[in-house]
Structures are given as C-alpha cells and as structure tokens.
Length: 412
Image (cartoon, rainbow, N blue to C red; front, top):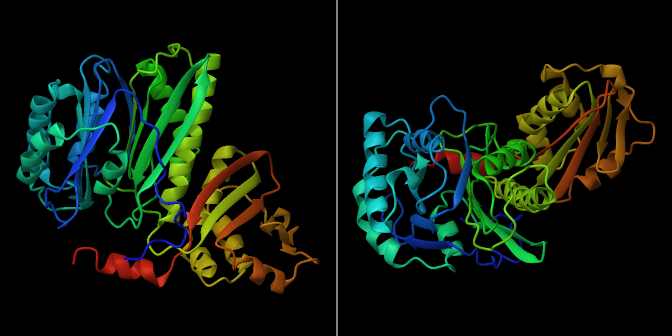
C-alpha cells in the first residue's frame, strides 16, 4: 500500500524520551506476517492514568476492561499497556473477556505489577476470536526488550490499514524544569470518534493528579479527536490513554486552573490536535485534508452538528475528491443536519473565496477561482449560519475510489 500523499514529508518525528516510560514491539502473527503486531509500554510505579473510550454500544472486551479499571485506583504500581493489531477482539462474546484476562495476567506477571494496572487494546477485524496465545507467548520477550527509545517501533506495531506511523510531541518549561509530552496514534478508517479516536497513547513526565489528568484529557478531547471524521463510522475499539509519570520532577499539577495546569493543557492540546490531524491525513484513500468551519450558529452544539453533517456527507466528500467547487452540496448538508438554519442568511467560503451570501451565489464569485482552489491538498470550507455566535471546527478528508477498494478487500 502506498503512503498517503498527505503524510508528513519528514516522516515519524524524533520523539523526546519520556522519563519513566519504556516500549517494546514484537511479532505475534495475530494476522500479519513478517511485521511487528504487538507492543508493550510500561510506566514506572506512581504514574497516573487517564483515558477516554468509544461510546459504541458494541464496544470491545478490551475497552470494557479498561473502563472498569479506570474507575478504581489510578496510582501505585507500574502501569502496563499492551496492544495488538490484526484482530479487534470485538463481538467475540465471553471468549473476548477470557482473552483479555489471559493477556492481562501474563503481562502483570512479567512486568511485576497488579492486574488492575494492566490495560489492553486490540484493533483489526471485528467478530473473530483473538488468538491470544500468540500474544501471551511474546510477553516475556517484550518485557525483556523494553527500552525508552522504542516509541516508533511501538507506533508501527499497532498499525492496520494505516500507511504511516503517527507521532507528535511537545516540550515546555515549567518553573525551570523541562517537561515533555510524546504520543503516537493509529487510525485510517472507521473514523468518527465518539470519545477519542482509534488508538492513541500519550505519555508525559509531568506530575499530574489522576482526577485532574482525566478532566484535562476529556476537555481537550472534545475539540481534537472528537472533532475529526473520515467516514462517519465510530469504531468498537476507540481508545485514548494518557499516562503521567512525574519523573521530570516538576511542580505537581493538582488544580486545573493553576498556571502549571494551563501550560500543560496548551502543550497537550498541541500534541493531541496534531495526532488527530494525522489520522485524517491518513484516511483511507485520502488525497485532501479539509477543515470545516461553522460560525454564526445558535449554539456551539448546533455548529458542531452542522460541521459534522458537511464533513460526513458523501456528496460533499466526493465533490472534494473530484476538485469540484460544488457549494450546493454544502447547502444541502447544512439543511439535512437538523440544526437551526435559515437559507437566506447563509454565507459560504472556500478558503478566502466568498462563494455564497444571503442565500444566493455571491456576485463576486468566479467558478474558475473556486475550481482552482479545490486543487489544493489542504482546503477550508467555512459556513456562517447567520443566527448567533455558535462556532465549531471539524476536520475531514475526501472520499475516493481507493476507500472502496481498501474496505471491499479488508478481510481478504
């Protein structure tokens, strides 16, 4: 499979070492041959953990297990995260939970931690039993090969239809102490998060209270991973986990309104937004990265509803793929959203080009200018509803023939 044309030219970034975290990757042969398909991350004792997960009513056994554990003690023993690709362990009945239990037990034993501090995830085909013995057989090897410099290998091991590994980081000064945040994500199709996204793992050496960490993560998530869509399909396995080791020795963050928390939030938002954008840029068959901006809605909720309606419309997305400035399809998507709107108050822009205003094509609009703009690999569609002050931005990609090819053959 060729690499997405929207992939960063610089490749996977040189992530900073996060003190207190080590990674490893190995080949278990769950589905893929001749490549790593399982990763292990271990964070030192005392690390705090937060997570957000899919709200799908058919979520996987690993997701259910992680959600249960995050309701318990979030500090103490070492944290272990084990992820496999090739099989999602979703819609597998009681066998799914048995697979999770087997993997958790062996990981806790190898790492030397509590089972309540072992979190797992699986991504890939739905409805096939996970051959967990293949994973269990690799856990000792994974534990023995843990190193602080293997984040890229871990990121590559959890890929499925991804065409490139996705990483991001931020470094900032907190009261004279350097603090690092680094993370990686996988995701390409079945992307319309209703919590977080596909699979994302972010680590920091900041010291953050567990409840504060969860509050911060949930808040940033709404305008990053919960504001992207590739194909409108929410996965059964979407998981985003954030681990703070405290190993940098910076001032503990115990209040979301403190100056230290504000600095941390800004840096974390940068990492999460970049990872979210990279997922869209690797959307199956994608050739265009599109920001959909909505202003003037009656509320922010309505604005996001309209933005998602535009971003998820097959007719809008295929027009973008064909480089057709078909603003009528944008009007259609606004109308079908169900959010309050008035045809005669709408204004639409493609980039800086005013396409329509007051419910009609703008006198200044040139179809040639619109068509030329649509040739760009990165686009912006902006709609002003004209009713209020509600705003939202959602990011998406185009819909091409390649998306159909990939998903028609996915289980082959």
